[in-house]
Amino acid sequence: MYLVGKARRRSEVSSKHSYISFKQVKKDIKQNPSQFFSTLSQYVAWKKHKLDKKLENIAMKFIRSYYKKRVKLGKVDIPYIELVLTTKCTLRCESCNNLMQYFDSKNQYICTYEGIKQSLDKFFAAIDSIHSVRIIGGEPLLFKDIDKVITYLGRERKVRSFNIVTNGTRIFNDKSLAALKACPNAIVCISDYSRSPNLKVPLKQESLIDQLKTHKIPYYVIWTDKNSSWWNPGKIYKRGRTNEDIIRNFKACMMPCVSLMSSEGIRRDSTKETIESETSIAPDGALFICPIASSLSRLKGLREFQGDFIDLSDSNLRQRIVEFYAQNFFKACDYCHDMWLEKEHIPIAVQTDSILKLEPNNT
Picture 1 (cartoon, rainbow, N blue to C red):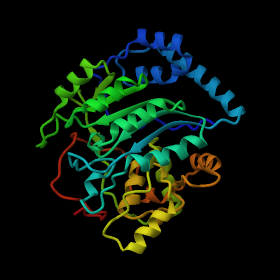
Picture 2: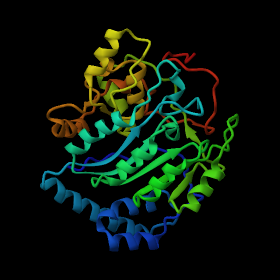
Picture 3: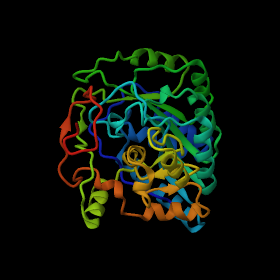
Picture 4: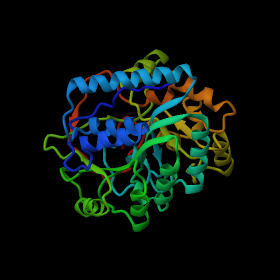
């Protein structure tokens, strides 16, 4: 089964820097047809060059035909997941769509390499392929063993491509650069926050780009256009909607950012019994419908959202994954604003000094 999600709604995205060329697309397809999807999708998605509409239609027709055959063979092919390594970040964006602005030092999620590997081992054993994995945080470059994660994903045959998204406040260490260089299916995504109206943390974007150029590691930069903006995610808190309206909210959103976390990072200020109880719910980690849902699982607890996520220790995990992608009711969707309303565009990366609360007034 090929599990398809709609494209995430984003404002203008531009790629000031990139090493992806159409010549490279053709070369990769010729040398390794299995890389067709990852190479072409990167080429199309970030618009370094404009693809002829006819060529795009041909590509989509080929992809649909390919996955129809995969479905008939009983294959489970996942389009995309986000791998959350930590909720620690060097910034505190007031409108972060991953809810980093709600975490304090007491409830941060930081996995270990051993913990996230255990979760990924379970996940990959249950599927046949995954088109793309995105490594996120917080700021993923704060994760001390990110080089090991890069190497792990690079060696996993079921992963077509993966990327790391960074806010440009950190640079890669030598081990991470070596790991990236050894992975032909890896790419780095740099968020350009230079247009933030109140950013205080110094950006190292140019140093980071120089690093990647020197080591010939593919990358692209987003939010470079002067008209780039975010859309306002609104206040995050439980609304108390009916089940029908929660389903309506999910269908209006359709964010295709299924998010994976290990079993680590349960609140340390909880009682010992609560921590042990929460950890036992998904001892090998869990897969959530989006990063908002995965963050809420740490802010509110896993028990609050039972039924929303996939327990990666499930004895029938393959079937549970198929059911999950057919699901349309998620309790976490009650925490977001009315997704069917017109989106308000706001400046990029506005910073806040406050740790926000899951309450209507957000203070």
